Image (cartoon, rainbow, N blue to C red; front, top):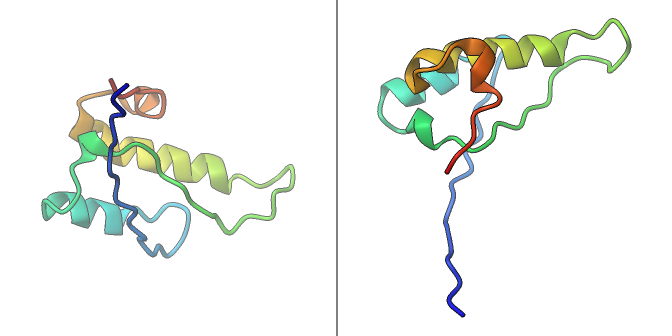
Length: 84
């Protein structure tokens, strides 16, 4: 049995808030990150987790909108795309 291994990079990108994607976009534009190769984005938003906390949805929406043109998908499909 042959095992296939894959290596991944983890990149930490500071943000100024849940809607700040400037660091990610800068890395993509500089050719340091291939947007088609992004498998996951993990983030900690500044919200409190309560019923009135919109920061997670805001962060996901902002990321999806920013990545849409790079991966040739409409923003609402970016989060659901899969890698083959």
